[in-house]
Image (tube, rainbow, N blue to C red):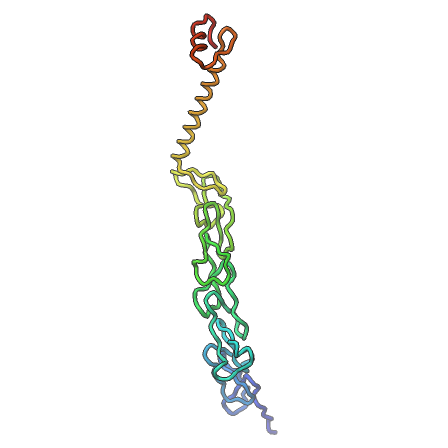
Length: 239
């Protein structure tokens, strides 16, 4: 009894006689009609669809307006690469998508966007350059691909300098004073000089307060030459 032969389905081919089954076309190739003995190669910037029955724009490329309108003649059915700042990670006739805020794409035909590095942020979408990523200011930090910088929570003795990548910051140098949190670093010399000035001011206030409270014969002596002289000449002891 003779076997019944049927044509290969679309997307498949068979190039030798015999009882072998038809084989699906490989990636980038297609067989638009049944009974194919070979597969056709997709044009440049195209790839085969899942069924291998036709071609579609490959990742990183989008259908032109002519193709989306169904004008599939040989001159108009081209796939154009995504512009910088855009990407496309699936094949098909869909359009390229803008890079999300916190990311950028400097090249054309991109299949993905690059995240801003830690310590930087960007609120701009469809960014085409790393220049869109700005350094975090002092007291703030960010991780990879951040839209904005957040306040640091650095422990005492640590500081988040410009472009910090962690909320804990880094340990202060020996010549710096760091309160922690989102505070910046202060040169230790400034702290010492400020502390000394504060102590001197307090001491002067204490001396002035004691002089104002001195008594002579039960009466307060004020800081004028006459009363100070009276107090010094008095037989009553100055407290």
